Length: 399
Image (cartoon, rainbow, N blue to C red; front, side, top):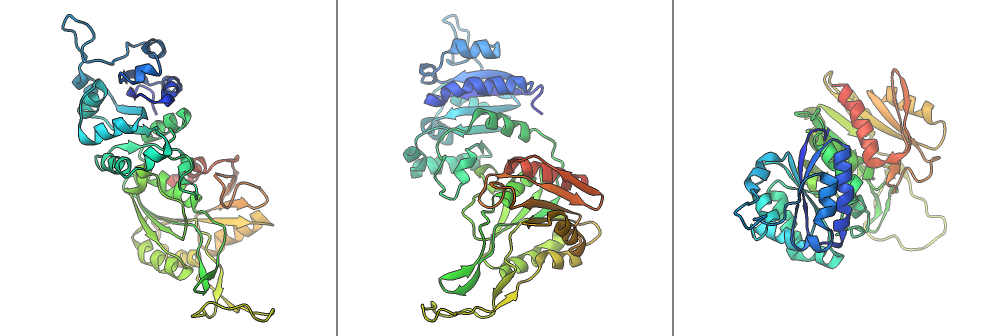
């Protein structure tokens, strides 16, 4: 979707500036036209000659290119571009952008830009975590800018990858995705994600290893395509990308009962539901008021079934609504998935298996099959963001 797009690439004074060459190569390969604007500090890390050779355009750095009155018009660049990408973007440039300090050609171009602006931060972790930097990033998001960060920044630790510039191929893919069709514009989609915790006592619970990564990837993909997304999330450390967090109505729950109540409340207003959560099938019949102390070795916990959320929503489903479910199986995968498809009145079901190591709980990758009443389609192992694209492509075809 980048073919024919005009991209202004801003480069700042970061050690990651050399990666701009790979960004340019990726953008041009995708059919885009690239104009580089570089700060004086950026030229200390990569030469304009290298960049000009890649783009086949003179690099813009100063307001005046010669001493004869010839000047570079940041206003024209702002009107020319379909998008502006600043990669790498240092903490200094973030601060200037957030506060309108127009002391170089890059910032004046940014302030004149009529097109969407994408920012790929690059700095050390301490600078990234500083409240000033975080405040500046939030301010830029509130202006409608898009901040591109590494996917690893969404790991449970919450810190890994933070501050490091996203890899060039992923940055190009992000822009490519942005310009894709908005095939879900106006659609309302509810997604459940993550585990549920069923309390035993105030400090213990029954749960599972779900990280919520697949459900969050689905929520971001739906939001990117223009949908109005409601995300009902169990207790997870996973966070939505800052680019999409403000577009998603996130409802945090803990137990199956809480997820059930939220789903029942919101489903009637939706055009579709994707039930990705790994909901606990059983909960203790009674919850101890105090921590259960170690005693006899034959402690017995009596369990009772939790709500079958998918089955309940399947009964509520109207003719215009689409429902997709997930089946995580350890054996007889296809047969079990087919039973769930019919029993719960789903339009299709996403099957994955614990027999494929590294593709389920806590993983960044997945390998799925999509099963509907017409058959089964198998997909290769790939990152969960790419898997989300496959699933939403299937959903989109049903509208």
